[in-house]
Length: 182
Image (cartoon, rainbow, N blue to C red; front, side, top):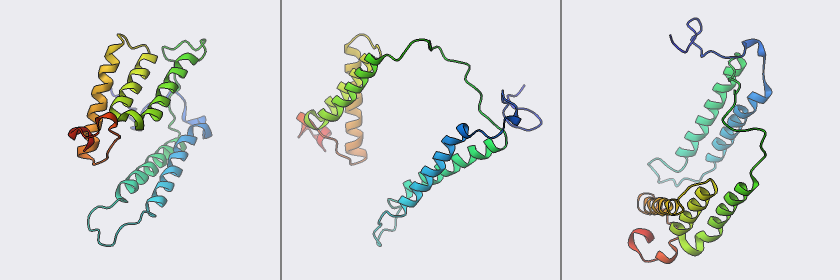
């Protein structure tokens, strides 16, 4: 049997369509439409040289803006037709426990260290420290594995950005190394 109702072709919902318009449920798609309109308007302000005969810098923002508007509008139409999301039945989280502020502080500290250190020690090392700190905060063990993975991820992103995208990330102490510094 299909997961769709045979008569309407719509996915089944746990709530009856008579639930009515839900402003709380419509807030996110309305925000998507507004963000899409803003993106389209701002993309039109990008200055493109008159001699440009290829896809210019406006193409990607226009595409993102139209996709945001289309997605948000489709969800709003669905809500207005009575198609509502299913209520969460719960997760494997104990809701009686409070926020683990120590973990939040560790994650925030890891991100802050990335922001402060990226210009000083370079992208490769700063991103490795960020990844290792975030993984450690979330319970990764043994200690050396997130450092090794962070170094590999930092190296891959540095090389991809440098050679494929021509975006130069700070090399730090690796300045002059051909595949890290461009």
